[in-house]
Image 1 (cartoon, rainbow, N blue to C red):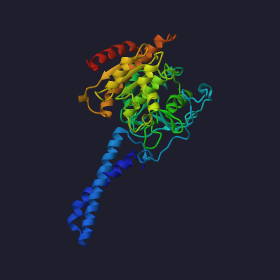
Image 2 (cartoon, rainbow, N blue to C red):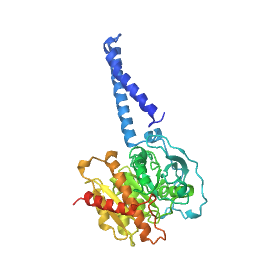
Image 3 (tube, rainbow, N blue to C red):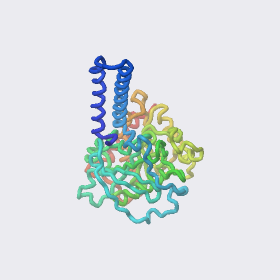
Image 4 (cartoon, rainbow, N blue to C red):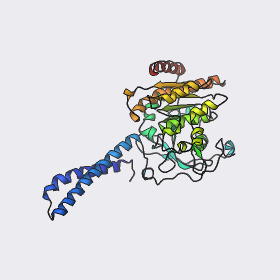
Length: 407
C-alpha cells in the first residue's frame, strides 16, 4: 500500500475512529483479572495514540511531500549504482554531446497534482544514478502550430526531505501556471522534476562526492541529456533554469552559478549559500566540499562574472541574508533579484512558498526573453499567444520588485 496513496490514508482514518470507539465501549465492560484488564486498557490507549500519530504524520507528509514512498521513509532506498571521480566539470572526460540518444519510456504519474505529468526511470550514464524523473509539457507542446518549436525548461528541486512530486502536488505549479501559459503571461516551460533524495537518510547537497554520489552530474548532465533526447527542448544554457525551495533552493542557485554553460537562471525560495544550512547534508561534512558547493564563494571567485539571472526570496534569518549576500557581490552580466518576505507571512513551509510560484515564473519568463535579446539571437522568442507578453511581464515585475524588497 502506497505511503502517499488514498487507500492508506482512509485505512488510517478508519483505524483512528476504531481506536477512539474501543475505549468508550469496552472500558467498563472488561472482565477477568485486574492485571489483564489494566494491560488491555493500556493497549487500547497505545493503539489510539499510535493511530493518531500515524494519521497526523501522513496528513503532514501528504501536504508537504516529504517522503514519496516507504523506501524514503524507512531509509531502505539507494539510487546510486556507482560514484566514479568525474573531475571538476563532472563529466569524467566523457563527451556528453556525442553520447547516442536514448529513447525513454514514460508512463502517467500518479498522485495529487500529477495530472498530465509523465514519469520515467532514468539510468544516468555519466552520474551512475538510477532514479525516477517527472516531466510535464506545456499546453502549446502538443499544438500542431508549435510542432517545430523548442521549449524552455525548468528543473524543479524539492527540499530535504522532499519528494520529486512536491512541486506538482504541494506547490500546485502546473495548476497555477498552465492557464497563464495558455494566455501568454508566462512562458510555456517544460517542467522537469528529478529525484534528489538519492541516498538513505542524508541530503546529497546536489554535490559530486567521489565514491559516494554524483548528484551534481545527475541533475546538470544526465537529466538535461534525457530531456533534450526525448522532448523538443531549447538548448542549454539559454533555454534552461532551475527552481527550488529550502535545500532545493540552495541546489538551484549552486547549479546555476557553478554551471553557467548549462543554465541561465535560478529561482530560490528560502535558500542558503553555505551547505551547512542543512546539517544533514553530505556537502556540509567537509570544509573543502562545503566551499566547493557554496554559491556565494563560487560567484565571488569567478574571474569572469557568469551570464545568469537569480531570483532569491527569503525572510529574515531564512534566506534573505543569503540572497542579499549574493546581490552584493554580483557583477554584470550576473543579475540578482531579491524579494524580502516579512516574518508575518508565515514560516518555512509550503504555505509560504506557494504564493511565490507565479511571480517567480513571471520573472523567469522575462529574464529568458532578455537573455535571448542580449545574446544577439537572430529570432528572439515572441509571445506564443499574441500580445506584448514581454512588456506586460516587465511592468508586472517592476511593480513587484518595488513592493517586495525591504527598504
